Length: 290
Ligand code: NAD
Image 1 (cartoon, rainbow, N blue to C red):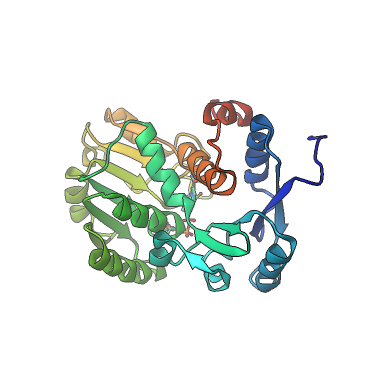
Image 2: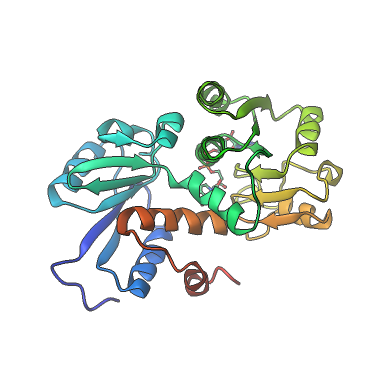
């Protein structure tokens, strides 16, 4: 517990519902303490009904900013003054920065994923990525990858409402970036095999592999993974999903969702405080090395 909180401290919020389970308050406050910077991060149970008032409150109380999670990521955009290109493209915001009353919406999920790859020594400029799943995480990754200079993105999704949404976003990305974005049906395993064969990175951005689908993988045939492939999973609990297990057996380099989570939080800290997060320290403190 910090005992030095005085009248100069600034508040950063997290607006979502439900949210009490989130690791973010602990992670963010651990970093502020370590850096000895005057910020406090608190979670607020805010649903879509309360959101307009919560944003007014953020402005009135002069919060430095807020994280935003479900169910508010899309609907919050209409209450903000400015949106980054990633938020414009994806229609989803997970971070608000309050700069002297001007609210800007960012999406740090895609930034976190791309930073995780960079930190692992993976240069994606001019390369191809195949993404499984186009919900919040998959969309944020696809949009940031396209904006960052990835050459080609193939997104596989089952034929649900996410499929229609990502088709429209892919069209926007194709018109507004240099990236070639394709959307294909996850049920087509022949195309999935072909797309993976020419990819540098494969990314699982579905919940398949975590509870209640723990032990399952969208890739069941190991021969679909070539040894040079980098296989990533957005899931961080469990640390090693079935997909990562299969990938490891095929000799692939693997990365779980911890890095994405840490680096998206680090991107938020940079936005709110201008500071670089001490990533290795947080990993240790939060037990992410275990
Ligand atoms: P979401 O609900 O927005 O999207 C889920 C996606 O999974 C959709 O594309 C949906 O079509 C697909 N899907 C669901 N069930 C499926 C099934 N049985 N077979 C095939 N596809 C299926 O969820 P989200 O917020 O995008 O989260 C996706 C995953 O990413 C979750 O595991 C979540 O924990 C993880 N995530 C991790 C981070 C991180 O920082 N590491 C951040 C966000 C999300």
